[in-house]
Image (cartoon, rainbow, N blue to C red; front, top):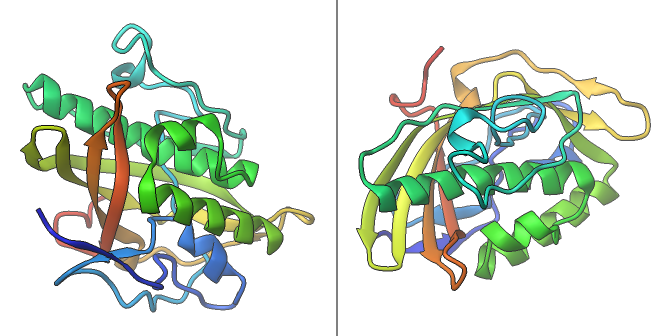
Length: 229
């Protein structure tokens, strides 16, 4: 299992808008694994989010029929989120990946609400991850920014599973995700490129309620596995 170290890099690159640095920070928790990570230098205003099928509606894999304890998310109509995730055939690994998808959507919900301490954030994040996102979401709201567009998450994999801890990763497509000014609703659109694909790795731990909480995150840009579509 890799060692995860807090850094000050940004997952969202900036072309024209300096305040997007704060918005970017909420995209993938600015924590870089030893030997991995990114220089955070791509120049656009895109941000990342995660979730289920569209506008916060649950996908089949996250439906109440599949998970009676599934959370509900309050996302605005201008956000579309898609999770592409298949069963591993192992119930424990499937639980890790299910909660990882929930955590990604909780992060997006916190961002658009401007609240890093929502019930879903507290449920699916802990330790440094929760503290960091709370701070960054607050700073982003102060900059007058929020999120809009489409968010796609795919290629979910459990890399290591030991008792109550697990390391996993997934890919994120940011090509149609953009920063938006809250007061004016102005959207800062950018030209899609391969640099809009990132791979996110997480360290999770199971809590007393049985949820797999994200505690550490690392990321890197444009891996071969992630450049799709």
